Amino acid sequence: MKMTCRIESKRKELLNIAKKTGLSSTDTLRCSEELDKLIFTYQQKVTDKPLQK
Image 1 (tube, rainbow, N blue to C red):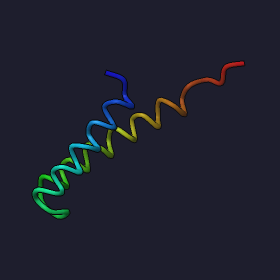
Image 2 (cartoon, rainbow, N blue to C red; image 1 turned 135 degrees about the vertical axis):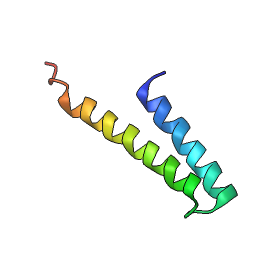
Image 3 (cartoon, helix red, strand yellow; image 1 turned 90 degrees about the horizontal axis):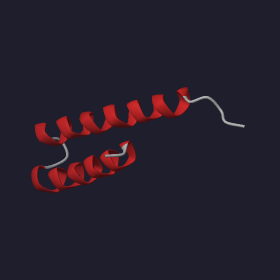
């Protein structure tokens, strides 16, 4: 699965969890941290790529 698809899937999961359990629930915070890690990893991969001519 492409990283962008994983990020979008996790974002949808986060929204669903937040609706069910509230914004400050443990499950919401855990999922938010997982999304943060995915985004951070994606940003690192994008910025580490050499520029193509």
